[in-house]
Length: 338
Image (cartoon, rainbow, N blue to C red; front, side):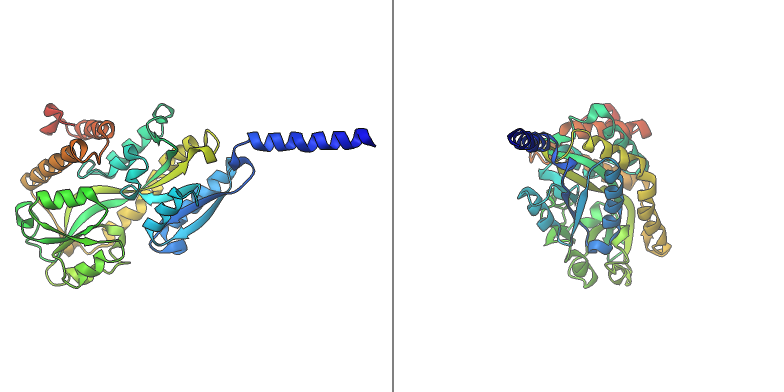
């Protein structure tokens, strides 16, 4: 009997050692805090449910928890109430600066460029670059090009922005810098208030992806002569940030490959939202005006890289290479300021 008891105890101890050595993901669900303005009914949450299904196939159980307040989701992740979190790149800037720089002002002007960038980040040799301390960017999905919405169609050039008020997210240093550089005034707002400010005429302009046009009823702010400048200010992304120690070594790599392989499916939501906006609202700008926007964007990016340390230098260089691959005649391709 004593031999059996000793053997049983040894078995229990051995099992405990095995569990202690395994990554948490191998035996317990990981809490995944997901920001989506529409909560569990939103498109971002639906995309993360697809990641949840894929992760199950890798032996990782993700327990999704919806948040309609992005700051709360980010704070809970930092407080270790979540093992993973889904945020916009702008909000994730203080977690992994390298990947958040994908959203740099004017750095990418097409979904093809964004896809190329995400493909590069999905390669195994890029794994070290997407990590910052305890954090790692495990997936990146497109959430739409960000456009300037104006209440008056005459506001479409850099010069015409001077003196105008623009609702600006209070935590978005890049946008505040651009607004200041253009000679406009930034009116502090957050995700829940910027649309209302634009719709009721409290500000002359706001910036947003086409995907929120219908949900936030931005047409109300456009009806009396307003429009949308058809030149992307930036590319909004959704980023899954994990605490690496909570997951197996290969989870982040598998998730990045998953997001890259699903890019075309996910970007369709943004493309459809843009096509669904009545053509009468779109404002086309001349090549000369685009060049002036590009120059403004470049100056803002360099300043935020060197002075405020908002943007990552390596990522800006990578994005410049993508722009120059697409158009070698761009002035910046010879100057190499990034």
